Image (cartoon, rainbow, N blue to C red; front, side, top):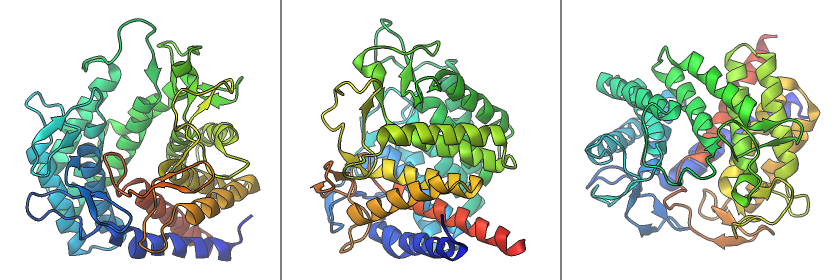
Length: 397
């Protein structure tokens, strides 16, 4: 277990890593003062690999900077930086049909759209956090409007071009998961009356269709009515993704006065996917597993990516603080020690993104179309905030 002194040390560690190591790796050098937005495709030493802009990461970075301003310190640099992202996204990242792009050039010319709406969800949280930081009512209105469109996509009221034929239809956990967190961020910054009920509905969708207690697993995709699809894609598990969903649900339990049913659900999801994903030989969370331990199709299935470790650090710490169960303290110690030993770049700061199974660095990029200032700084920020809350509560007892 952790002593109160150890938890205070962890609190200081996460905040120090966030503000003295992780954030300075990215900012202010990634501010694109010429075209707006951020230049985030960077190598180990921070040098630029490519000046294209991933719309997901533009939104995530905007959210981060505005959130730092709102919750850590009202630094003008962070607010000005958030405005760079907000203005760039508004100007360049929406197509004429209202759908957002996925990948644009440095000056905002569109390269690619994708057949889902995750760019939109990151715009929701970015615009909401920026609206809170700046008081910009247009940003708040636009955040809520895009959130409404995301709800329509999630419910099927609005359709995106399908990727697959109608043969062997499926649905993924990603949509309800990301919408839970999108709604939570919107609710906690500028508010929206749709959030509370919608979050519970998305949690129920996950509980009913994706959590399989008989198999002790959280599925990544299932049939439209929640059955196992016994083919390679249908059996493929993503432990880090499911564990991320677990902490979203635990966060909701915290918001709802320690709701015991939500705590139980979140902890079960964490338990199941830790058992599936933790590498007992080398440490760390594996990327993909098969439901029945058969071979997985993707060749990177046994690699260690940065973000599953971030999500597991959050989930295990939150589970421990909420339940007091010592097993979660031990799980947290394991994943925290592994990740900061193997992923953290002690020379240049921030984390490597991709390790081989044995913990050696597979490649040195710290920023690309999918990795940027989000999962790691969000982990450090969130762990700091929940430890800070816990310490204050204990000081009052």
